[in-house]
Length: 173
Image 1 (cartoon, rainbow, N blue to C red):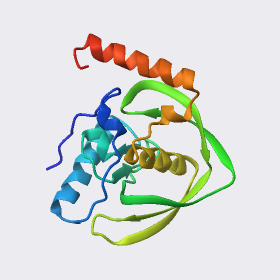
Image 2 (image 1 turned 180 degrees about the vertical axis):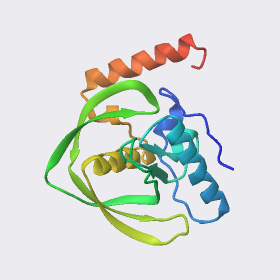
Image 3 (image 1 turned 60 degrees about the vertical axis):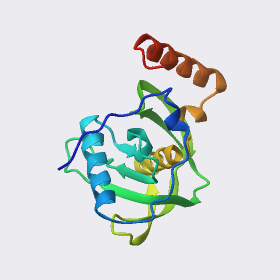
Image 4 (image 1 turned 30 degrees about the vertical axis):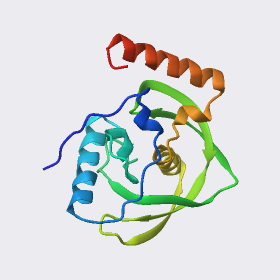
């Protein structure tokens, strides 16, 4: 049974925590991955890190397939970037934890990652284009980094201030 979980929103301090590696590949991890897919698709989004639903473990779900195409869900456990291209790409990024805010971010155009699947098997994968951007964005989350950290200080402070104000207004901060 998959559960749609609440997504943590900026300025929640949990978003700044560094997530811990998964050490046991069991039914609990598979249930977490299932919940993350349900939450990500419901949002709707193309990537989700476990920390965004309050779980401080290094788990990421991604699906960059176009909405009209068949779903292509991918789960990455303990993902790490092991190589980056010299070539850079600029993509407009958004984040489920920073709703309705989008900004262009420059990142390596391609990355090679190492990760485990839900059964604990080791894999390596080359990512480019939107998938490369998305996986870098989600791995940043696992390290307590948000996409707004790649913006100018002025833009970042403006966004944070806006979300603190909204949280205070809603009685959440």
